Length: 407
Ligand SMILES: [Zn+2]
Image 1 (cartoon, protein in one colour):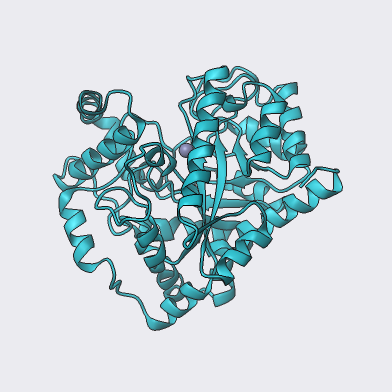
Image 2 (cartoon, rainbow, N blue to C red):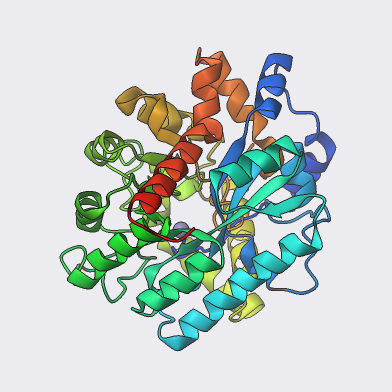
């Protein structure tokens, strides 16, 4: 989930119509198609949960808006999806815990409603079994440590309900960790923050360092006994956003076995786009006013409307147009730095503004096609598509077992 002036994602009407016409016939090679659909494709970050809170939303129907639903996951060969449990970092205390629980419940109920397509997965074994039986593995990650209300018991409850990663902060500091988009208050992780990381290791919950301050990342890297993930971050060398990772951070993450799952958000992919939004704050301001007027406090509506307006600004030439191939640039940059064992996919679908050509999950096979064309081996592509994420999950499971955590 991104929280910059323009929240949200989605596309313009023009994009939607093009998608309806061509979405099912992507221009990719038969070899890419075959490889993609036999691979376990795992996306570590999707904000579709906000839509699931609306009882009228049907994940089983194909939608013209948003990026994720069962038909489009099927078309894109998405085999595992981490539904993000997210509320703004400014919502704290018992209210934050309550809202997080409601979202966990919404994901679990959605899975229960679609037993032929979805299965709740809490282990790598579950994900592999789901893939073998032709189902999509639904997993959960909590996006922001504020949702545990500084209570390890709540963290344990979340783990018991199936949460398999937690992002240590969202876009503001929480009580025990600094965020990359807030003023430092804790010099990284507090002592309690370090305890949280240790307890996550014991419980088998992956430590996610997307959104956190660089110092928080390094503190977590030292404390954690298991590899870390950056569930939805891209490369700062290409786009200088604090949410992205520097080359050195990517190297240090990889040296401890971790994975950076590349984020598809236009503001994290393209320096040109980022510079333009800074140079023209009025675009952001105007969009925010319209979002507020149209959506009030409805987060799902804000996401869709924000993305629609941003897409429109790109179409109107007010902001530079960002193409999906930027995703490949970031993947390739990270692979050149640390090899193919430490890079994965963390789209931020339904929580950010997608580049043109990656309008929704049905476009995922294009990534396989592009990597094949770049000369990547089939084995390396399979790792990037999901194998690396599953390897970290396995290592986190093994660490949990060693530390005596209950599974
Ligand atoms: Zn996010």
